[in-house]
Image (cartoon, rainbow, N blue to C red; front, side):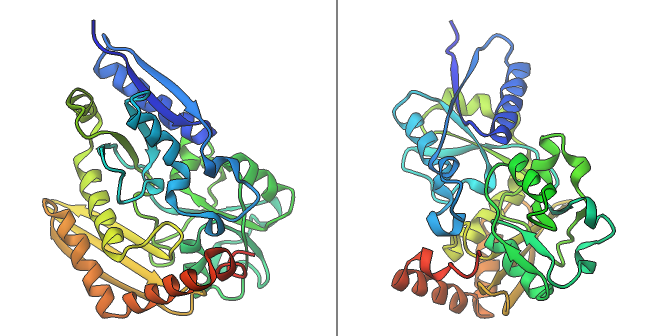
Length: 326
């Protein structure tokens, strides 16, 4: 008999939508196999009253799933790729990157603000975001707006918006689309204003590095163009030693056999923002990411990041970022 493949997933609504999609796609390719889903709550799902920047890094949403694979009680884990650290635990590997949805950030407004775009929101408008990357870029371009942290799943955030706690939210367009909430997207924010998170819009499927049977199965969902883009982005982030709570943004484009990678690093207050771009062979995404990191470091990115890491090391993440996310 063919082995049952066990899929680990977070319990959040978006995570389940993504995991059920992966299960269905795998079932199409392998109708004789059984794919079982096991759900669990991660630390990041349980702590909803504290800004993400104050409680840790990307591993908040992945560690429990990885433990399941390492102790052989699960075979694969489905992640929003933007949540997956660039350095994986020993014994695990990114086995597949699926075709990317629109990676852009999106503006969502409540009923009383339908007449506004991001650039026309009145001074003092309260914009909700839990991302320091978005916060830094939007502060850089729109210093007259007020930014306030927002936690909870997408539905909870939208309820807070519609009740008047916020004038607008910044959310990932891909997540809204997967939840059939694309009608709430009021404006797609152009990359000139907000470069997206590394891996945003793509799913990453993690598995054991020595599980050749599962790796062969996962090949059926690999999307080469998306994989090249995301590998370049993750290489860039890894070279800068940045986590999801550091203001680092990217954008990628594949045209023929060429891959263009744009990257950004900003200070926590958004006052300093540096950006650069590299283009090269789509077959060498790892090197492109490293090249862009070097170029940005020559422009001062390393100084910005060292200052952030020094503050965190001296005072702790919670204290350093207190005023950034309130």
